[in-house]
Image 1 (cartoon, chains in turn orange, blue):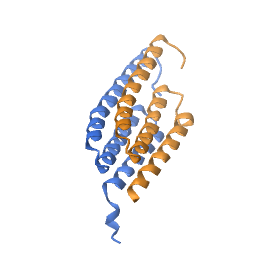
Image 2 (cartoon, each protein chain N blue to C red):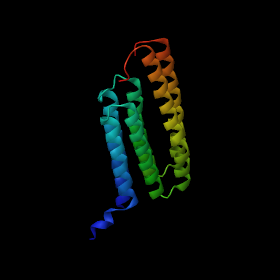
Image 3 (cartoon, rainbow over the protein chains, first blue to last red):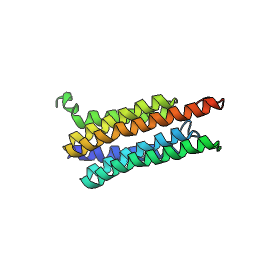
Image 4 (cartoon, rainbow over the protein chains, first blue to last red):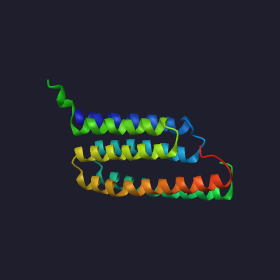
Length: 86
Length: 90
């Protein structure tokens, strides 16, 4: 079935591209840019979950990604307030 | 084969996802990146609807604006902190 292959390969490509962009993308010295680039592999992993019909894992991963973004951004704002050189 | 057969929900959703990913990586200002992140999540909801997981699509549609609002508030806070210190937002 063609659709399943499109989901799987699009997810794998998103994971690879997003990981490389998170490590060495343009303007990645800024922590916000790095956190935003982290969202791309999260969507890629979600597409791979979707290919294998892991519904519960997909729901949990979407919720956990949101909470992870919240916690990381709180930490970054706190460090910026303290004036730490990031 | 009719070339309009390529225009189903899956292909359009994957195209929107890749457009959003390229925008997040290549654009430089954080607000542009957040707009392209919304585009990425919209494509993901489209692919979920193409897979007929409508409950997961509902959960994703509920959680994505929360993530966008958190990112916007964080960008505004960090912009305030950096301008009060006399720096430019990168």
